[in-house]
Image (cartoon, rainbow, N blue to C red; front, side):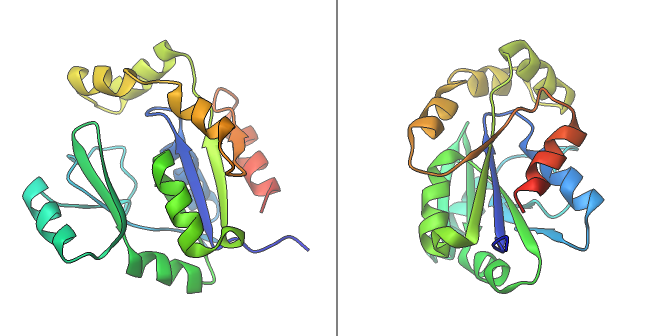
Length: 187
């Protein structure tokens, strides 16, 4: 019997395909998947998934963080990100499989909180830098943000491979259909 994983995580470098895979799962299987909303001070993008982010200004985020509602919060590329504990608790109790798009430093926090057997973690392999740059431009990132995000490319994948997190690596240079079949094969 395949275990039920209430939370499915997608991790990888900027532009690696995390949101694309989550969007495809939500579109193809809306009765099986939902999305855990995160909070961010990042400007919204047209490519953001509906319900992916609760947008706040940096000041609003910092004020909220003082009340400690977050399971985790972090800064990346000049923006704040966090996920409220209540949203994770709801996902763990839900009949749906809830999707999260996370930076690597958050995955161990989530897995510890949710108990490892409740979380299945996918890591999107890092495509070539020219592919990442193109993807970021297509989604509307500003050039300074692209360069900041590309500065440490590949480091997260190296760390993921060396970690004790049982990541399933997904090569997003393959077709969406192949990637979705790989993911569904683990569920």
